[in-house]
Length: 387
Ligand SMILES: Cc1cc2nc3c(=O)[nH]c(=O)nc-3n(C[C@H](O)[C@H](O)[C@H](O)COP(=O)(O)OP(=O)(O)OC[C@H]3O[C@@H](n4cnc5c(N)ncnc54)[C@H](O)[C@@H]3O)c2cc1C
Image (tube, rainbow, N blue to C red):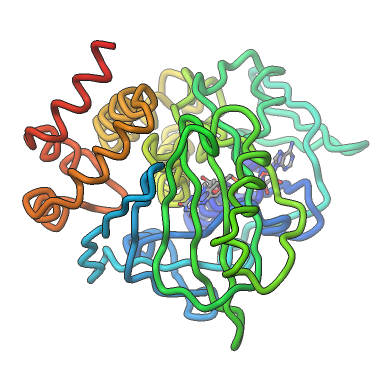
């Protein structure tokens, strides 16, 4: 009988495992793939604030990102004035190596990490939780669902799913060197979302991580984007098949049950504005581990006690998630020509100053509130509301 069984060896599961093992709990992680971190679906942009939750070694860093540019459907663009210092410094990390380093840290703390171990079924009773993985049954006192956007186990356990999910597709292609992150908007290529081009370095070579987040077929939008002559001219290789994946943009309605906690994408914890989820995965993992450690000390693993986890994430993330989700609702109603206007407004001196003063990579609430005080931005968003 283990103390904690963690389903999923991504950032959320591995940090939960490390923190619980450091507290002396017997922890086992079950990861369905043979190799931790693979296949890679993620662009890997994080801010240095992430280092408050886990060590980031220099060998996982693919690039330090110093410039970003928003490109409107009509071709207009504006620069994002990012100060990028201290905890706001932005890095593109190699997600496979980042996850491997989290696994090593968890193992060093005493957790067991089993790969090639897909959990097919979970059953919970008064004595503990039983996880079925192939012919093997694993018993634990508590279980952490850190299985990302695989929501089969949620359905089987009768848990609700995140209500808002979009599609993504991403590919990495060798390219001419570039120094700015680009975010492209346009209903034709990315309805309800955007496309991105993120410069990374592989040894001496340069590459772009190119992706789409959208309603419907993100792969088709990405293909149209890659076929643009100006984009083709920048690529040195042929794009391979993109990795496709869902992305949750709203927390699941229930993130605890008796002996069970949901962390990271399994709990729907990403930024509703951008879909970035590495930091929130690690943060929720850390809050879940704190709660489990207290639960073991108190001999309480019932839903009533574990609700402390929901209180904790609500305090730290609730207002952020609501405000960002609210902004997203406005933005998806905007027509292309309104996004053109919005990008123009974001380029004005007064708004650039607001961004410089209030923008933070992991917390967008202050920026959104400040932008709503800008007459040009507020009137655009209101127009979309009353359509
Ligand atoms: C295209 C794309 C780009 C992104 N770019 C960024 C970015 O630049 N910055 C950022 O902050 N966030 C980004 N994100 C979001 C980020 O990738 C996720 O929020 C993050 O990976 C969540 O971590 P996790 O541990 O919760 O889930 P995951 O990383 O998905 O890990 C879950 C693990 O569980 C395993 N698993 C699933 N089911 C089972 C099972 N039944 N049994 C055993 N194992 C199982 C999976 O194999 C996987 O390894 C991006 C997402 C996408 C789709």
